[in-house]
Length: 380
Image (tube, rainbow, N blue to C red; front, side, top):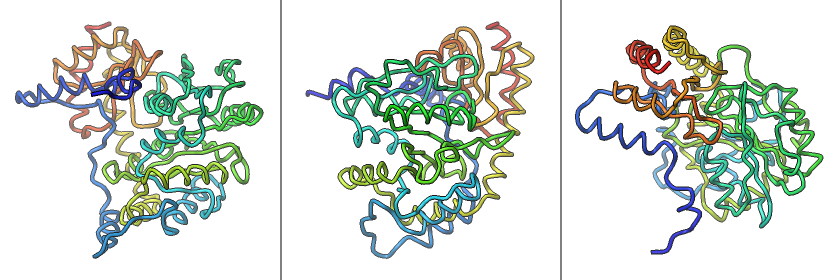
């Protein structure tokens, strides 16, 4: 059977090999503490579940691409509280079935043959995958040091053929944070070149120090040249609900709405009602931040004792550590019952690092500390 050659070229999702080995160990009855996939286990708050149950209709019908006014208005109110940003719920917002599908499909609305899409690496693999399936030429920008993508990192040759530039803050996989000034410099370059700046801000409410900035804060009224992506997954413990939001330039949002009416990816309305309840409440997001901070605090002593640097990792859901041979350390930890992701799974520049997603329970994080310290000390 003939398949799309892009599918063959990209292969399986990068962390699949680690997951398959871990699955075989589980099937053999071996206990594992799994830090590999960013799928938190804390219960979804009861008020969100209640909102979903109350919204399940007797007769289920197709949702609209633009979504319910209820969720758009709740999200607009969230943006005002969180970032001090005003948007038009009617023209600047589209609810999505999670952020992954929205990020993957976005290039289909903007890319033509010969166009380029740029993104930082290491990074979320979906930026590259969506661009390549859309037929774009990809421009990976190798991150280093603090793993923040800055305007000066973008190759000069990109601006002539560039169509989309992806940025992510707090960053997956490293937890680095882009400042408002750095966002403004990126946006200035993008606007001058006619490049759409796509900002993945799905971890904006997972942080320990100062709240991360949003590109929307520097974009000004109408958010010209910007589309930002948000998600209920980590903020509200709703990974399985598949609920996200796109917000930004009305012209870009209109193009995305036109695309999405063809591909049929509107979010179910009962999920939209649950998400509206989530976006309307900030207390539960604060509680979840405290849980993730406690997990990070439980793990940090293992890295410190082993002399292993933790890079960035003050925001987002992850610990990003410089370990030398990331594949060897991943295998050693897996044999000891701790599952992590090798940094190279997130693209060039990730080599020599491992990523731990703060998804096991606090008790499991504490139990994993000794294993981590022993394996990392051996590695160093």
